[in-house]
Image 1 (cartoon, rainbow, N blue to C red):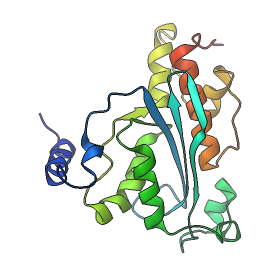
Image 2 (cartoon, rainbow, N blue to C red):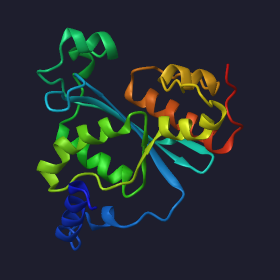
Image 3 (tube, rainbow, N blue to C red):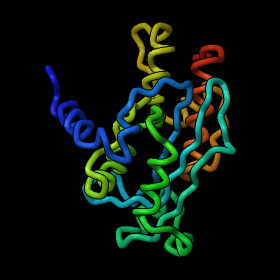
Image 4 (cartoon, one colour):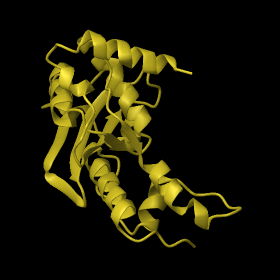
Length: 208
């Protein structure tokens, strides 16, 4: 059964097949993924705003830290004390932030039609789509790769009868990957990229 989201993507592809963003809807045939993370003012997609976006390309076994995005946006009205406690980003830290429309253009150009990797990546994609769709008439059509699913699928056979701990800190520790600037968009994106490469090309993590 075709789900509504699939129907919407097919419709968007047809509408933009001859436009400047047609390439985004083409199947990706390379060996790169883009690890992406958004820091936001809350966890409710409907009401939250994006305050920073980080992304880095992964090519095979290499995390290409020289090919990255580190975007700060102008402080939104929804930036409050509660959200600052989590990501430590204040309005004063965003005084040089760029406009959201400029940030979205940069994200589309950087990601292209590559798969998007992330930890709870569906949230980041939904946050971006919230602003991309009204401006461009489509949502991100890229394939999504969820890090926690990759981790779970690799080690689940060793956890017969047990639960797999999918917390970010736990996965990082099990893979012996240091967390870089936790709760910053670029830091989390690079950490996820390193964990992904470890899972895909390294030894399975030790459990215990």
